[in-house]
Length: 445
Ligand SMILES: Cc1cc2nc3c(=O)[nH]c(=O)nc-3n(C[C@H](O)[C@H](O)[C@H](O)COP(=O)(O)O)c2cc1C
Image 1 (cartoon, rainbow, N blue to C red):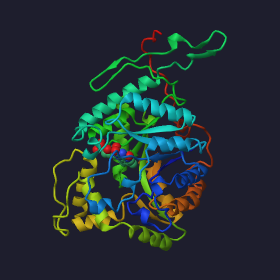
Image 2: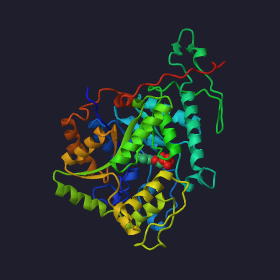
Image 3: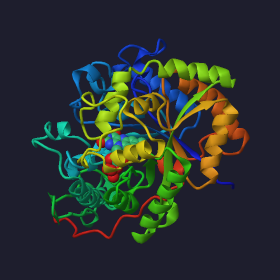
């Protein structure tokens, strides 16, 4: 069968752009409007999307009040695993990927939560493994500042090894449910972990049977050298922030190399660059729609977004028509900061130029169904993408247009499935179900 692409939707309450909540069609308080959210997810499931993905931040950022008061998502974000658990009861097939931090959690907590979600959804859970981003998150979890960048990836690596061990606590054939003898499972079918490492001490076992998928699917978006290493070792669905085709190809090749170096197959990882589509029947109509959406983003918010990704700096004191000042490397996202400086150099941008560029958003494609499908096909065939992480700039309009206009065009080209053929997220993605690792000592009851 010809290779087909995958579609994952980034679900952001009020649309993928920071001004999306101002759209006349968006419900007010979209962030906590679960019926609205569920209705959008059902449309994506009817279109046979592989999964939806919910991002997360564990704090209200330290941005200037002028910026914060204009941004809906930071004030109105439901906790992802809770939302996905609710969605698991209202959907049948679509994958449910939630973000959770390895810096501000314990492995036992997340092993339980994602094993539970995988059981609730009968094999549709995925975990976007993040190391968190900002000091404001640290301050909500007993620290003054965020753990140093590379230390948090070392912690993530150990965290994941512990979680895999916990998911393998019970052998899959351990359960007997023998009512007559009164034995629920074989005593030698449950294993303690007794992990003692640099960051964690976890005895185990986990008090839940092995998840239906063996392991929920691991999503990752590391982009710095330390982040790419963790993504290459553990990631299966890899989010790429690359905005240009050549960067996305470089990233995909590098990640596949790192996966191989870690003893995995190149096919064990799937690359998902982002895509923000604004589509309409004609180019003129699509451009009008985009102009309306771009007009919703307040320039102060666009500037605030730039300040945020540069590591929480203040740009208001600098000349708006002068060059972007060079700040020291932040402890936030190294790669995001670096990408901003590279773009500023390449395009010779002033602060104003950057803000105007921000209004257009990276990874944006505005056009007819044919033009958007051409973009998708080009990236797919160039080896930059196995699938796309689709972010809908304003809801529900841009989602409806994508599902009604682009998905059928992708199907006409044989690039996207007509319907689901499997039931688990691993089956949708064509990923193997991992075997249990060789187990530790049996638990003596
Ligand atoms: C599509 C996408 C979604 C992301 N979602 C989150 C998120 O929800 N929470 C978070 O803390 N970081 C998130 N990140 C940031 C990544 O975890 C990572 O920090 C970033 O890609 C930079 O990599 P680096 O940490 O190696 O510099 C996301 C990144 C991408 C590309």
